[in-house]
Length: 208
Figure 1: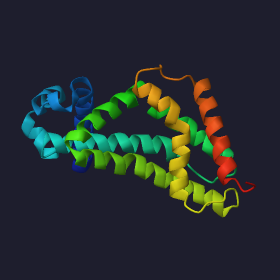
Figure 2 (figure 1 turned 90 degrees about the vertical axis):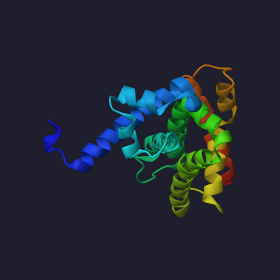
Figure 3 (figure 1 turned 90 degrees about the horizontal axis):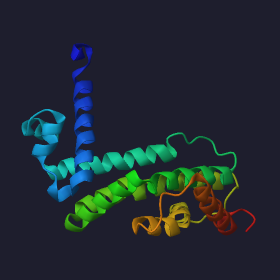
């Protein structure tokens, strides 16, 4: 059935399947306890097959980290278009961001990645570059477009982006990481985001 597919597509699909399985194994067992043998068995191939795509377990983990960040980034910014109202745009970004990062799934991934980052700083750097730093750059570009239209007054859009993200996540993120609260309801997320947007616009709005 796959004979009609181009070899590149076959390879990409196989790589994605490996990453799907690797993600599940890393989440279940943690990086240290996960093995290439376990991942290969679940994929339905040999360790040699894995090594055709990833040169080591560390390389496989890095691929998983980068893909997870890309998924979050696309969910937040994949449909961004023209900004008619910066308040509405910030509410949408904040709402999507908190819904993703405060979910049980994202927190499990975050804990696994951060735990490995202490032993392997390169993993932490890869996560930061592909995740928080890349997301802030995209948000900063959105803020700059709004500033160009006179909707914001900015001197450093990237710094402003980091500040907005911090306003959105600070209180709930700490509580979630400490297992001090369940995943927030959409209503709770909206309250947090509306407050963050109000503070942000008080600092960066055109009439401040």
